[in-house]
Amino acid sequence: MTTTFHRAIDRIVPLTISLALSLAFAAGCGSKNVAGPGQAPTVQIVTPQLGANVSAVGFLARATATDDQAVVRVEFAIDGTVVARVTAAPYDAFVTTLGLDSAAAHTLTATAHDAGNRSATTAVTFFVRSRRYRQLTAAEIGMRHLEPAWNRFGNEIAFATQGTASNAVKTISVISASGGPSTQMTSPVLQDGNPTWSPDGLWIAFESNRSSTSQIWAVSRADGVDRVPFSLTPPGPDRRRPSWGGFEGAEAWILFEDRRTGGDDLYMIKVETSTDTVRVLQADLVAEVNGTSELAPSWSHLGFAAVSTSRFGSYSVILIDPFLGGTPQAVAGANVNIVETQAASFSPLDASLAFTEDAIGGEKVFVVPIGGAGDVRYEVAPGAFGFSDASDPAWSPDGTRIAFVSTRTGVAEIWILESE
Image (cartoon, rainbow, N blue to C red; front, side, top):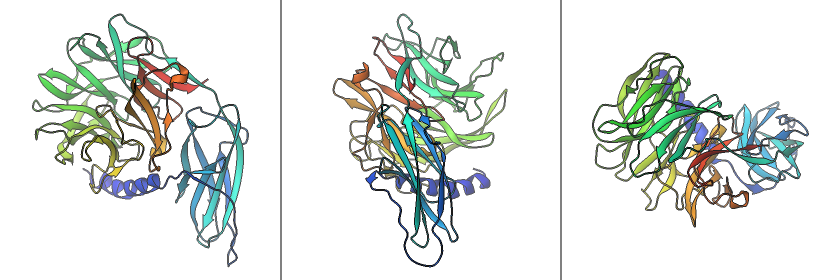
């Protein structure tokens, strides 16, 4: 890896994980001023504005804070419950609204604390839009639609189309997030699946058995070009479920499962993209080899990854740093009956995680705050809305929508949870 990128990871990742794991759901929010030299801080909520109607999935809370000494943290609370603590500017926090009633007004407070143990609080009232579920993919006789993946702009979703018969061929397609006809990206003769976008949106990486074993390939998204897939890994043991992230400019890393040691480990390759080519700059960098199954990796937005692992007995979701190693962090609330072969998905600012869980009667998608106590969970598609199952979530880049798979219509289709 480049020295510049390594320094960025050293600086950002530990801080990001620390901030993420400081997210708390505990009662109490207020303002206090303690006697002593200096002045209390000032704090102002920038977004949302007073009376705003925010997304039914989540929104970015942003505050500014100043002090004559130093602001040590800003706490955000909704209706008296602290939902995020941020210890350095910019004071931004992504807040999910899945647990909030759309028929009631809600209050967001921001409390700034300074080094002299003084604080100040400000508040705004906001409303949550009603939720709706929209079927994105159209029914095709004998076909199912799976494995949605947003591009970084939030305007397109790549997905896999597969016949309902056993070992049916599987292809990669792209569809506008607003709906309409899809564009087929790979030929319907092989097993192509688990698409993931390059950070620039020019390429889609995917797993394919076109070289006898499953390997990582990439195909251009650009219109009017020859869509001949590029091989990114050489023939050999199965390599599956790529996740494209950890990027710096045109260079980025693809994290994937690898069976070269006989088990499921994590490796990654460094790649560079341009309009007409994708080039491997570094291959076979070890990300996680533990002697247990490490499956379905998913890059966070800020440089760490969620992984499904069997290292604790039953499958659970852990956070790892693919570059620096260290002790993995288990994600509370995402460690019971998870579906180990489907990647989890991060909200903006890596504040929450959406994942698939085996449930009585089918699979379900839940959202948990990273670093939560394990008792705060939100179901993305509850049965009250007509869903008996949901799986394979994909959070949109702006956090306002979650795509997922459901057989609500009798066959697997891609749906989107969003605001009305």
